[in-house]
Amino acid sequence: MNLELRGITKRFGALVANDHIDLSVREGEIHCLLGENGAGKSTLMNVLSGLYRAEEGEILLDGEKVTFAGPGEAMNAGIGMVHQHFMLIPVFTVAENIILGNEKTTFGGRLDLGAARQLVRDISARFGFDVDPDALVDDLPVGAQQRVEIIKALSREAKVLVFDEPTAVLTPQETDELMVIMRQLAESGTAIVFITHKLREVREVADRITVVRLGKVVGEAEPTASNTELASLMVGRSVELTVAKEPATPGDSALVVDGLTVWSPSGAVAVDNVSFEVRRGEILAIAGVQGNGQTELAEALLGLRPGSTGSITLDGKSLLDSDVRSVLDAGVGFVPEDRTQDGLVAEFTIAENLMLDRSVGDPFVGRGTLRRAILRKFAQEKVTEFDVRTQSVDEHVGRLSGGNQQKVVLARELSRDLRLLVAAQPTRGIDVGSIEFVHKRIVATRDAGTPVIVVSTELDEVAALADRIAVMYRGKIVGIVDGDATREELGLLMAGASS
Image (cartoon, rainbow, N blue to C red; front, side):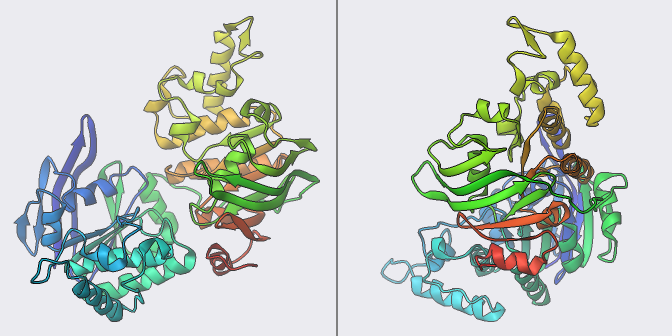
């Protein structure tokens, strides 16, 4: 089946998410839709899959115009979508998930689970998926859950299959397996749309590449295009994709974590007896698939997880069970993984956000009064130093792009006298140009002698920044390796193998 999108325009109020986008995908082709987070890729595919209705434009399948009132109609027309966050019921078996929403019954009105099981076996055999139809989804590893999503789409006879950021929760080995599966699907005649922002994956598997920026198609490229060329199309200017840094010259141990155990609100162990140290002038990256305790570890370091056991010491001073204010006063800078929820107040100005963790006493407050002139001068200096694109420091931070918001967070945290920087997912949801800037500032912080912890699920980022890498799996650190460890070695650790 051939797919064509013509002039698709989708608006959300004044925001034009898709601006007259044209896209064609041929039968048996892997067409990559490349662009930064927020470029409009997923919105376009949600129009295709019937979740959204476009204000303008048309969809054609094999040259025939089609309209979808909802996802069910899109599925019936042969459009399948594998979402970034899986649409599976964890407590159901694979067969039960496959039949859900497309229930077949026997003569007596009972669900025909036998037919669903056989369908899973048939598709698994065809593509070498090795999926047990009676396994509970909750018991399957992430890579197998994604195969269940693919089987579910193929069970509805999908002729066009959309993969929306499919590698976000996969290990490197699982990513490689997915690439093989995508190629097999294409060879069987399936038209595939592959949505991603990862350049390596694009060049590895795509037959054609369409680049989207700010809701518009800005160019097409061949898989032979270089990473630099693709990045320039994504951002609109030339960028440096590699982090220029000298080898670390670590000093004494600064942060020592020993036997740290952290519990989730439900009482489950999120961080399990973790021990490591970070020396002055080095970057320790915490790697792993999202959801293996990295978030809870970072929050415990900042004092956001009371009741943790073990020990956390910075320059010989205990931080365990300290409140956040005490941790900040001890010289810890923190870049949270969700800047909109935990790093900024959208309704506050840029200047106000730059003083959030220094709202008491010098230099911005005296005798209970805000020293506006001092704050304004400071904010203007930081906006210039950190290249925050804005008309005024009085602009609400919520109106800035993701990259500029992250620069505000980084400016605030790096403007203090730091003894430790903890940066969680420091480049999530920002453009390639902003990533370049953030990475340079993190390396400069290391070079100034400050110990740095970077928590990231992006292996390219880990490899670019880390002097040493600690890999977490199910709440434990399963290995600590040098920063030049291979993707294969890291992938095995991320899957639970001990170093």
